[in-house]
Image 1 (cartoon, rainbow, N blue to C red):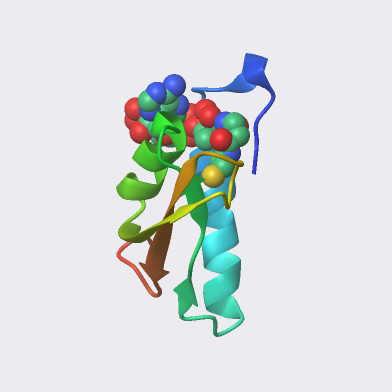
Image 2 (tube, rainbow, N blue to C red; image 1 turned 90 degrees about the vertical axis):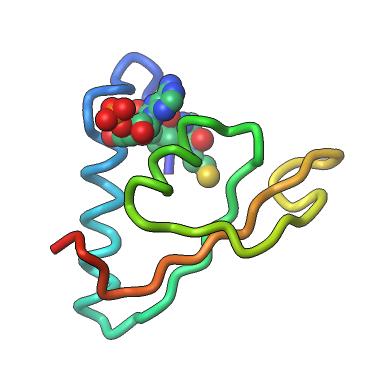
Amino acid sequence: MADDREHRRQGIGKELLTAGIREMGLNDIDEFFPYANKWNAPALSLYAKLGFVVIGELPDICKEGESCYKMRLELPTALF
Ligand SMILES: CC(C)(COP(=O)(O)OP(=O)(O)OC[C@H]1O[C@@H](n2cnc3c(N)ncnc32)[C@H](O)[C@@H]1OP(=O)(O)O)[C@@H](O)C(=O)NCCC(=O)NCCS
C-alpha cells in the first residue's frame, strides 16, 4: 500500500487500510500478517494505531540488508 507523496497525511492510508481490514473480516479472515521495514516510522505508527503488534523481526524481506518487522492483526478488532 502506498499513497502518492503529495496526498500523504490526509487520512487516506488509514482509510484504505481500514477498508481492507473490514473486507478481510467480511471474508472470514481472522488474522493478517504484514511486514514493515523497521525504519518505516509512518507505516509502523499507522499499523500500531490500528492494533497491529510486532511478533518478529526478519532480515532482507523488505529490502536487502535491512530488517523488517513481521506484524500481526487479529480480527475482529475494536475498529468497527
Ligand atoms: C504508510 C502510508 C501508506 C501512510 O499513508 P497516509 O495516507 O500518509 O497516512 P494517514 O494520513 O492515514 O495517517 C494515519 C497515521 O499514520 C501515521 N503516519 C502517517 N504519516 C506519518 C509520518 N510521516 N510520520 C509519522 N507517522 C505517520 C500516523 O500515526 C497517522 O495518524 P495521525 O495523522 O493521527 O498522526 C504512506 O506514508 C505511504 O504511502 N508510505 C510509502 C509506502 C509505504 O511505506 N507503505 C507501507 C509499506 S509496509
